[in-house]
Image (cartoon, rainbow, N blue to C red; front, side, top):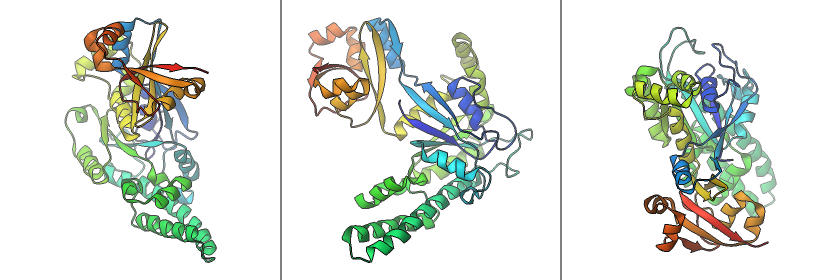
Amino acid sequence: MGFNCGIVGLPNVGKSTLFNALTNTMKAEAANYPFCTIEPNVGVVEVPDERLYRIAEIVKPKKITPTTIEFVDIAGLVRGASKGEGLGNQFLANIRGVDAIAHVVRCFQDENVVHVDGSVDPVRDIETINLELVMKDLESVEKRLQKTAKQAKSGDKKLRAEVEALEKIKGILEEGKRIQPYLNELGDEEKRVVRELQLLTAKPVMYVANVDEEGLFEDNEFVKQVKEYAREEGAPVVKICAKIEAELSELPKEEKEEFLKELGLKEPGLNSVIREGYKLLDLITFFTAGEQEVRAWTVRKGTKAPQAAGKIHSDIERGFIRAEVIKYEDLIREGSMQACKEKGLMRLEGKDYEVQDGDIIYFRFNV
């Protein structure tokens, strides 16, 4: 599994339409009324990566296997969710289980599509959800602080350090701010507390601006507002038209390419959503290539060769001897694995090697 990303937003902003397009299914019901989604829908999506198919053209395997990404379509949230309004508690519990958040924001006017607050205001919508997540985190921190503060009266240094960490985190939340933009400023103890409490606002976020067709080609005022808000947080913004993405997802490959050309688009917007998700979680892709299969694998940046081998099979990690590595660019330029080897472009790497994005690896092992 590449990573797990929850699609969130107010009711009726296009979450389920986006999910349907992503997963190329009609699994998530999309309808024009709030709380259409109650139980979260989960879909596994292939990650588009042209490199995989370029490698396959050279190796000519029997099978090509992309890496995947999991998306979770979570019920729409309303003001007061942290206090149980709407489907609040269920919504917040579902967010706790994802690695990253794709926050869908409506950035188009359409009198035929109702808005839960009666008007389109993307910054207000973002703040509504962010405030509910902040309030829920504040509740978690205060409960932990109350308990730890009592125990710390014994004079235990570790507990006193935890109290200080909790108070710092509480201070950020009380200002109505998410924790994630401040993670780099937190000390080790504070980061430990954040991890243990699984704080909702500590998850990386990208904002998905759902526009109409015109908004795809020129930023409307709504998109500009979202970008300005996201810039202050250091969060990425992906602009898509969920309606067009849904139409594209139902077309055969040839017709899809023709439709994109007619629209003046190079690729579906969904590709950008997935790429930003990768960046958000510091993920990279490495490849294995042979006659039987060319396959893409996802690991976090900084992963060492034995742990990357473990993604394929635990025995390979356990019996790891070395990794034979060819860079993607070298393979494409030279045209074959053999040519890379003959030119000394295949490197032998040991247990401390950090896998790089685009590496084509053959693992030697012995169990």
